[in-house]
Picture 1: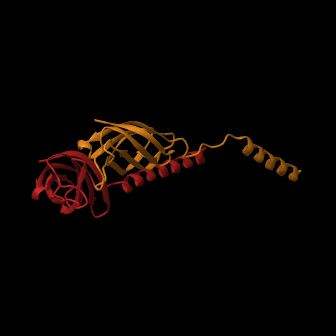
Picture 2 (picture 1 turned 90 degrees about the vertical axis):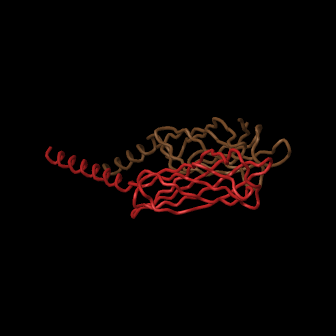
Picture 3 (picture 1 turned 30 degrees about the vertical axis):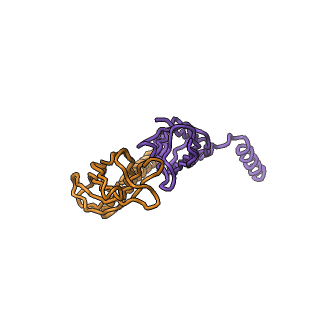
Length: 131
Length: 138
């Protein structure tokens, strides 16, 4: 009798574990949305406006890189790392990317943008730098 | 029933205690801020003399690390300087002579961007906060 109860208990545990819905992954689902890239201080920097949506709270960093081949062939580039906290589903943020001292200032036009945010899939896309 | 009420009371006390402990642990060094008041070109663009207005709690110390970046035609001028001060509790001026990085161009009059990283420390804790602002080199 006791053995039968124990077997039933073990079976129910296995069944419950197998049939119960999978728990949500804590780090899943964060997304970066690029809102715009604006020149600052005559191209000495670029302000990158973006949103992060986070189903689970995130405390980490945002690494933003901008690279541009200018019309005159010179290269402008820069990278910035910001602390980022995302709570209650989402956050809007601006990161200022300063031009590298050995390169050229940024100018209006096409550039390449790469972003890494803790808990989110990275993005690597073209963007248009505007005044 | 009595046992259940006692259990609830202990649980409430534990949660409240944890919350208070967390608030205490997160207590920072207090409100602080910096902003660039003036940035004057000097020595034919070899440097920029930056005056910051810094506010931090009396008794604390502040270290500011200022980087000025400006466009000069198709090149970049950039320089970094840091300075420490004792906080007075009211807005206080901090002057920094920011020498240009020899890899880059000279500083010229016009818009620039300044990044100020301030580290404010009291006896218990340190806060590190970065702030970007657009300034004008005069």
